[in-house]
Amino acid sequence: MTKNPYLRQDFAASLVVFLVALPLCVGVAVASGVPAELGLITGIVGGIVTGLLPGSSLQVSGPAAGLTVLVFEAVQEFGLPALGVIVLAAGLLQLVMGALKLGRYFRAISLSVVEGMLAGIGLVIIAGQLYAAAGLKAPA
Image 1 (tube, rainbow, N blue to C red):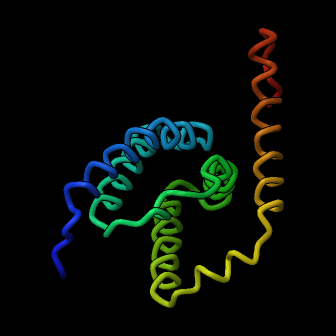
Image 2 (cartoon, rainbow, N blue to C red; image 1 turned 135 degrees about the horizontal axis):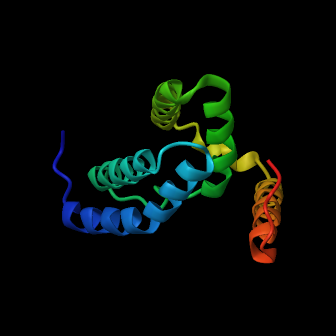
């Protein structure tokens, strides 16, 4: 393994990524019915892994809030123990696709599609918060 000449900068960047992503990791975990501790561990591991990878301006990106829906459905469908296997398989798939340089093909997906999906998720989140803002109990 080659020595990373930017290890100090990459580690500092991973610390920032960890601090920014931590509330999101915990929020996604809680909203998905997963213990908050697992969200905390996810943020820590993600920060460490990011720090070990060579510098890239594209390491942290994407529709993170959309993960709430996916994680919730995975936990409901397959259970919490299977979630680790699913996440591991998805990570390995990303590494293989990265090694094969397949990322450029995902640029074919229109930004409007991604923004529309995120806007829909945002509306669901906002609608869910309206009950709390009005002091009402949200339906199940």
